[in-house]
Length: 167
Image (tube, rainbow, N blue to C red; front, side, top):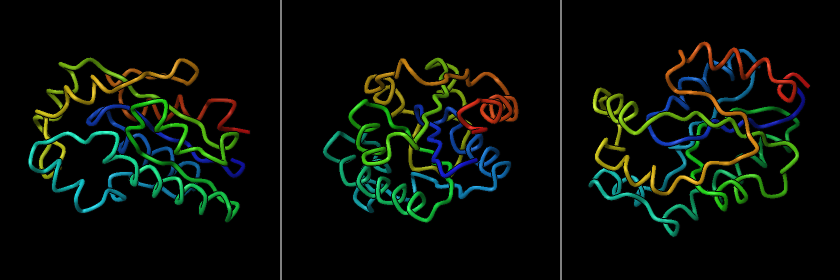
């Protein structure tokens, strides 16, 4: 793959990280876990059960844009797992690199993803905050979309087959 960053996007619990790691491994790209770029204040807020607002996400988007810049400036590729819920978040993430950032949206129903989140342990994003992510989500109309019901391996295989990924 040419220097590019694929952004696995969607609400928390949709499978972004699992699919992203599979894709990154196959492409021999750096995997970037967007959650690791949250500030301690954001993590504390989410850990206490409070959803983030756009102001909270501003510095997070800036940090991720810097990471994208680093990857692409080095002439390499990356796969980023990031909710990228709103159009303005996606614009900020890709700023200065629009032609080299490809979004992949993994979507599911509230019920399906809520059930998954209830089963997961050790993550600061609790199932009770999922509704706020669905409310904030502005689904993009011009990106590949995959159903979270599919096995992560199936989604990864379909992503890897995209012409934009193979270029």
